[in-house]
Length: 151
Image 1 (cartoon, helix red, strand yellow):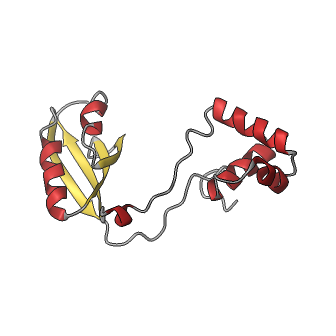
Image 2 (cartoon, rainbow, N blue to C red):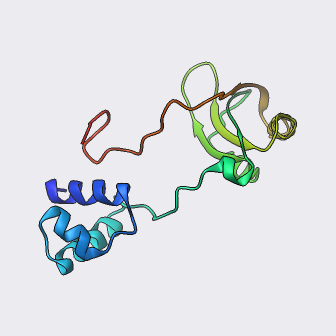
Image 3 (cartoon, rainbow, N blue to C red):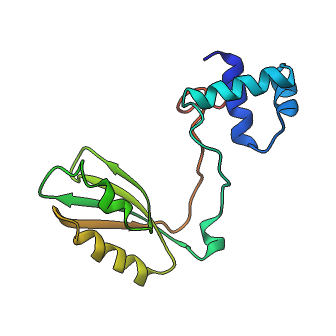
């Protein structure tokens, strides 16, 4: 991956709806060359998908919580059980005092409580700790220039 690929990734993160002509102009390539580079970035997995960044609050999911999950066994094979809970938008195996970290979006704290009950029903889970987000400070996409890079 060279500096042009990195610049293309940065441009796409800012606005993935840009035409290949606009992308090419922004990074100094022809339309065809920009299209080919983006195709290769997709093929090699650097671009996993193209999505719309939707505000969950606008859809009625204003409660955001991070939940650590304690367990009595290795949880690496529980992805299907966590994925079956639609309110869980991310799940990660972690090191430390807990086994799993999940990001949960719900419409209310009552719904969050129901999600916690369903997490407890997963085999091997023996405890949870939820942290409710009051207000996000900022969120940033992965930088094509590396962690913490200003691009």
